[in-house]
Image (cartoon, rainbow, N blue to C red; front, side):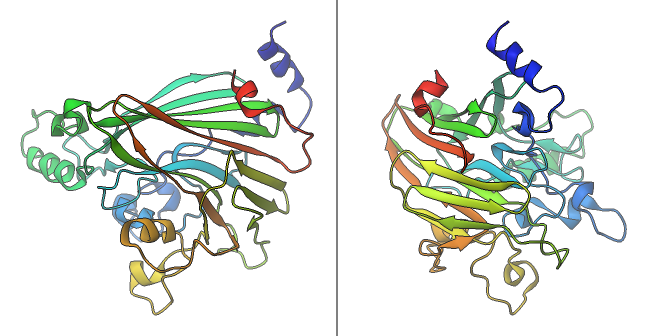
Length: 332
């Protein structure tokens, strides 16, 4: 019996299985019927991509190369910034049914590279441009082509954004040392001819269940050190996310920024989009000194040489887990 066959056999008859954690995080929660409360069922217009960074979801979460527990209470994904984009890349971009000349369509490049049935190992590759992501260009050109039913779709590769191989291939791998002990390796390879900057933000957050039901217990993320974050949830228990070395650690709340979205007088600070505002707009929102919250990220900044790679190592595990095997050994 192979190791994977043994893991599969262990899953029979027990609620706590190797599939407790897996690739359950959606790639797109915005613009779906799951978050649609419009009076006429116009899901795409009710929750557009531009709202997603600032607006708390209710029924699910999304992210790039993400995982969550099976009830999607605690989520992990990778956010990126190339120093050029107008927004932090936290989720996939695409066109709504009304914007695409052939209906809704994701406008990204990514690959599911490998996985085991038990989710003991997962591998995902995302191709991230080094130039500013052409959001407006994709919307405008596909809109222009809608008048011709025979026209082809205008894809990300058609924009020239990847010319001269000016992109990062970001590989995200998950390997489990146990049911609730997950080693994470994020490797960014600069395929271009010159050094290029990249910010990697491994992000851990709780799905917002408390805003809709006042009696629901509010979970907590707590800074324990510059490399260690604690996540406490009344049903899931206590987990820690540990970086391989000390890094800037930012915390905020997974709450809607009502000021940005609906011109509310409520303070825009300490909201879901705090990391975007801190990194892109240099907002003085205090997320770098916040000690508790419901959304957190480590911040790793690199100038990656041409044709070279850089890696970030982390470990997400239940706090009661026994002393772990070294991270690199788990990934072998």
